[in-house]
Length: 166
Image (cartoon, one colour):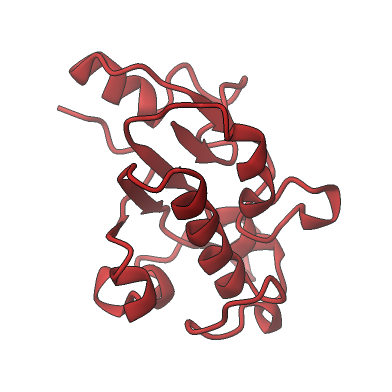
């Protein structure tokens, strides 16, 4: 099962998503739960944030779950709403990450979870172009995952979404 934003959702933006490459290489089935424009917190007012959608997936029987998202949060959620890495409420982006993982663990207690973080980007002040920030966000860096999430056996990695599988 793949959860995410437009990087995950099948749409007009690409001919193949990251999970299509995984399917092609491994043959595993894909349950696509991508929703364009969503994120850990973004679209919360429309009940489409990642953590808010988990209950609608309860009937699925995934072997593995990946969550690929966060770019919309980085781009459109005010920095003041990110909070701290130890937040556990949905008042902050960090708290929404925590809530999502807890919801996944409750709904799918024995299913491995992988969190994939796209590289953050910002708008260039002088040229108005999207520019990748080549620094991994510290809040999704595998070395800074809070202990409460490490104990839940959650894998965290950061990759650009356009890297081809070989």
